[in-house]
Length: 420
Image 1 (cartoon, one colour):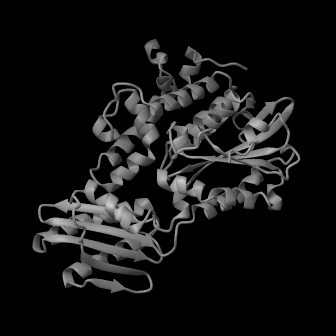
Image 2: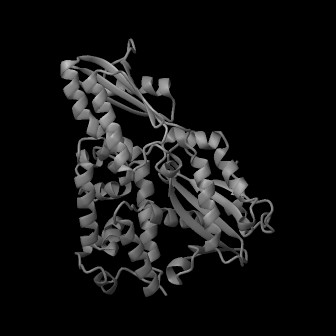
Image 3: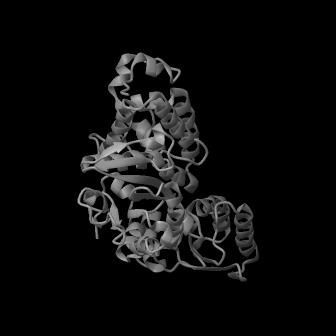
């Protein structure tokens, strides 16, 4: 059954916009979700992101898709979205427009049941800590397969199947499961928790610097990490740092953490955040969490590490273990992962160290992986067309399961051939 954005289908959103609004796929997309739902969500994001602190930066990063869409509609001021309005459409914006256009195109071909499921999925993604990235992962991955010559049937939307869609090419079918996961789950020291701690301690730092002018560095090793959900740990850590400042102590340590205040002795370095951050990164490595606060009385820098190294690959392996239960076992299957909340250097490191490949291939040796013919993975770097070594050239990493009977089937080759 073919659907178009007719007056009848627009009526389902509860709004009847002027026809000129239909010229933009982004406006059609927002209209499909519901103008009131979208406006309420953007108002919430804008309020949180407008805060001129580190938590605001985390919010802007997490909800970059929603803010970019609204900016492209001309609705979000540059100071909120974090970027000035460009004179020309960037590669990232072009990719985003393509995904939105593909989403709108999908609505032309779904039944009423499929439209309802898609709309509800989008609305659910705009609640709480959710974001559109999971739905966009589904849409982009389907578009990749279509470009490779596959026919895509959205059985998850149309029929409510546990797997997301069915691929068909050359008379061969394959089930596809799309899952968006956060690299935060592979870290003991979470970025949002770190941002909250820095925001809370900054005012105290600047007040302390007024009576102790100079340049200081607080080194922190947090054996138990700093999870987002553990507000008591954050409060305890703040209290311990405050006590050090009040007492003049330079060292506080126990089994939970080691805190050490030292003079900041980097010579020949600009005392701005832009000048200090690269030097701190070289000094403490890619897994450290860093912060720099500067005022007229001095500089307060912080560097924190968890008690153990990040293990994003191990988390990915655990996530893969649970995905085969969404398969029927009747056809070959592809598990497609989107890894969010990861920066360029960490993503590149996962690939170059072969940790990601190791996790995928270890999973494929397990009995539960028997239906899986390939595992794929990518990040925002690939979603938005980043060039160079920070992104995978073909738009995703693919790891074929050589033990699967369909591993050498030429009809599936474009979707399953290993990219390494």
